[in-house]
Image (cartoon, rainbow, N blue to C red):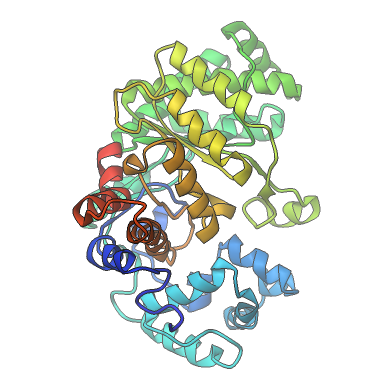
Length: 465
């Protein structure tokens, strides 16, 4: 079998039929990503392959560093051609890493290049890809159309303006692009300098003065309303774990006042303040019919020297080993007790927690919405073949795979849409191979419905897009 041929990852007749006849041409609902609203609004074009492929992609940056590449050729001042050459020298060493698959799927699907990237092929691939980048359709809107992307959910801070989303909504772009409400910076009461700088931004965007915790809630409510008016139907929180210490209005006010005076709060005070706000956010999401995403578990910026030099999202994060269960039960239980449990998607970064999270969803379903509480797709270090299969198996064993809302890119790169194809091949192989072994019914119509729903149909219905 040739590498990355039409039947890549498809190891049975039914698996191949499910992918080619059902999954392959399903539209994409990329409901969680980190694509730039500005680049979508301006229909951005790229000068060269390095700018498009290597800029901002910390997956690749980690691999380059692991291969002994100097930082000058990663995030430094080396030329784009030099950075691309460093990547070409690294790719042959990525065998068995999913980046080898993704790299060559992207070359094939975007540029029609089937040659494997190496130092020997770098010149030809650089020239061919750059010539394609000059073509009129090679722009943000062209890519979204090529891959049949029906919906994109960007990730946005409440203190940021929504002007780019307004411009996108007024444009002829067929893809619907909506903001996602991600208020993580409001939790930084243990870093009063950063916290107060963010509060000032929130004051500016809401044209208000925030002196008391009640003022903060009003400003956040105003931004929540503005996001809703802009089409937002999802929120998101990136946390090491859910907060679990109950907090009333009086305690929240004291903690807020302390941070506003420039005094760092204790870890216990921070957790209480986060719990107070997370309950507030959950209530707001439930009231508007939003879906809340909880991305739980990473250790972020663990390399102090390099994180200080390059900032966050530069590749210095790792899988965390926080104990997730008790805190998550406490938080979800608090929302359920208040009658304010919104649709929720739980994402874990540690595979140890797969069955914990998958089983947790079943304890909070209420019969109001199919799959109301979701076990999210393999995330970050787990969005590869092994991680996806582990997630699909845990979900199937404890809940309803048939109600799963499927894959997302969680990416900053417009070259990441083949990850949906990658997931679909893995899904079809799992279902098709089990059917051909007699572990699932020999009912192609039923299997086709399951695959089509997981690829696109469930997401469309669940999010209302």
